[in-house]
Image (tube, rainbow, N blue to C red; front, side, top):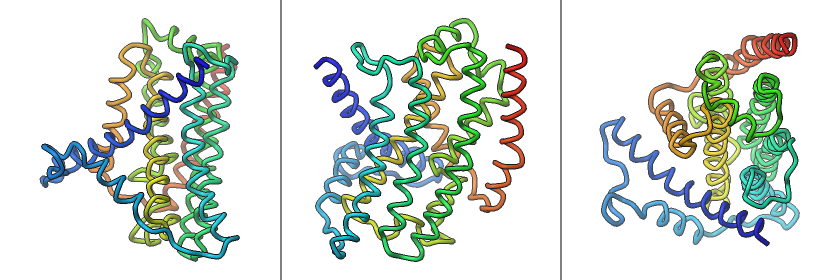
Length: 298
C-alpha cells in the first residue's frame, strides 16, 4: 500500500513537472529568440500548460475502421506507459522492486520506446508517418546500443549495479569531472534518444512533414507530447545520478533539462546520414574501447 501511494504521488509529480517544463521551455525560447513567450493566461502565462492540455483533450479524434483504431491508439498509450514505468522503477521508501539490477531494467524499458513510435507510424496509415517512424526507430535502436555501453562503463567503474552505491561513490568526486568526454558523449546520446534538436529526425518538419505523429491531434497528441518530455526529464535525472553526484539532485536535473532547451535554441538540425555515422563510426567504437579498458583495469 505504501509503495502504491509513493508510485501514485510520483506519477502525479511527473505529469505536473512535464506541464511546467513545457512552460519553462517556451519562456526561455522566447528570451533567446527575442520574442514574447506565453504571457496571457494569468500573470506571466503560468496556467498556459493547463489551458493547452484542456484544449487538446476536448478535441475530436479521427475516425478509422475499428481494427485500425486499435493500432492508432496503441502507439501513444504504449509511449506514455513506458515513460511512467521508467519513473516508477526507481527507489522509493517502500518498494517491491528491490533488485540491484534496476538500472538494467530501466534500460530494458527504455528500449521499448521504439514500439510506441512504430505503432504510431504504422497505425496512422500514412506514407509520411511510416517514413518518419522508420527513421525514428533506426535512430533510437542505434543510439540505444551506445547508451547501454556507456552505462556499463559507469557500472564497471563503480563495481555495482545499485543506484544508491553509484551515488555514494561520487560523494567526493563526480564521475563527470574526471571523465568529461564520457559525459559529453552521454549527453549527445540522450539528445538523440529523446528526439531533440539537433537530432530530431523523427519529427523533421522540413523533410517528412512532422514525421511519425503527423496524423495525431487532440488527446492522443498530448499523450505523445507528455511521453516525450517525460523521457527528457528522466534521461536528465539518470544523467545526474550517473555523472553528477548525489546532492541537489532536483536542481541538477533542472540544469540538464535547461541544457536541452539551450541546445534546441542554438543549433540547427543535422543531416540524417551524419547522425547515423556519428553513432556507428565515432561514438560506438569509442564506447567499445572504453568498455574494454574499464574491464581490463578492473
